[in-house]
Image (cartoon, rainbow, N blue to C red; front, side):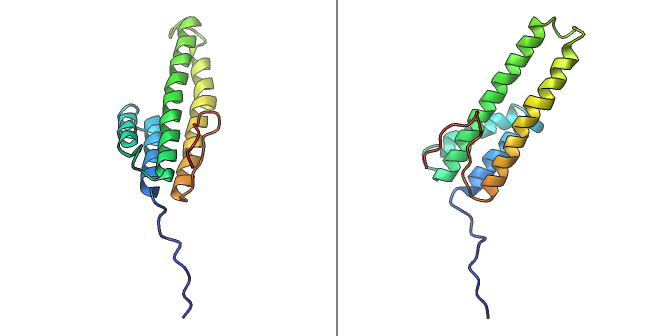
Length: 133
C-alpha cells in the first residue's frame, strides 16, 4: 500500500485568510459596505491573535478596501468637477473607472483568494501593506 503524505491539511489561519479575501470580493461585487464592515470586524478579531497568514491577508484586504473607497471618492469628485452627473461625459468616466479601476481591484482580489486558498501569503501590488512574515 502506497502511503502518500496528506496535502489537505490547512495552513494555520487559512480559513480566516480565505474569509478575508472572500469578504473583500463580496464588498466589491455583491454587498458593498456590509461586507466591508464584516471584514473590519474580522480584522479586529484576528489582528493580534491570528496566524501570520491570516494577519497578512487581513491587512491586505482592509488596505485594498480602503484604497478602493478612496479611488471611488476621487472618481466621484472628478465627475462633479467635470460637470456633474448630468454631464455628457459622465458615462465615459464611469466606464473608464469600471474598465480599469474596479476590474483591477477585483482581479487582485481573485489572485489574493487563490493565494489564500493555497495557504500562501501575498501582497497586493501598489495597494498592499507589508506583511510581518
